[in-house]
Length: 254
Image (cartoon, rainbow, N blue to C red; front, side, top):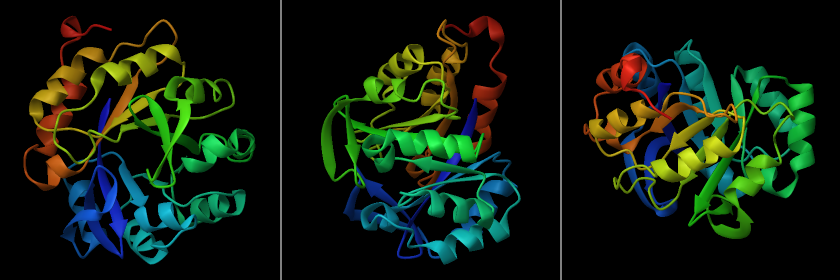
C-alpha cells in the first residue's frame, strides 16, 4: 500500500475542492510542477493528477500544467479528468502519463474501457466516484442510479489495473475516509482498489494499515490518495507512508 499525493488542477493552479464543488475551492499553489517536485522529493512513489476543468468540459484543459508536472518529476503520474476517448488516452500516454483514469466514460461506455485495456495493457484504471453508494459522473455533477459494486464488476477480467474509489461526501471534508465502503468494494472484486477522499489525520493511516491483506476475491487496497490533509499539514507524508508500508504483519487483518 502506498500514499499517493493528489494534485487537482483548476485554471492551471493546484487546488482542493470541497465535496467536488468547483465553486468551493482552495488554491494551494500557483505552480503545480513545483508541488509535484515537493512530493517527489519527500519520497512519493506516484502522483495523482486530476484535470478538474477537463472533468466538466469533457476534454483535457490543463495540458500545459500536466506537461510541466511530467517535466518536473520522474515518478509515475496517473491522470484523470476529461479523458473520454481513445485518442485522448493515446496522446496522454505519449506525453508521459503512467496510467490513465477513466471515470465518466467508464460508466457510459464500458466497452471503451475494455478496448483501452486491450490497446494499452497495464495503463488503464477506472475511477468510481460515489455518493451514498451510487456512481457520480461528469465531475460529480450528476448522480446515477448505478451502484458502485455493480459498475466495478463490469471490469473484472478486462485488464483494468486499479479501481480508484472516492466517496464524494468525504472528499475534502476532513471527516475521515469511508473505510467500510472501500473494504466492501475490495472484497467484492479481484481488482486492486485505491481509496480516495476523507483522510483527516495520521490515525486514518493506522486504521488502513490493518487492511493490507488481500480478500479471498483477490481484491485489496493498494493505495491511498490524499490531498487536503497533506496541504493543510494535518498529515506528514513520510510518516503516513512508513505506517502503511511497514506495519508489522502480525497486526494486519482483512
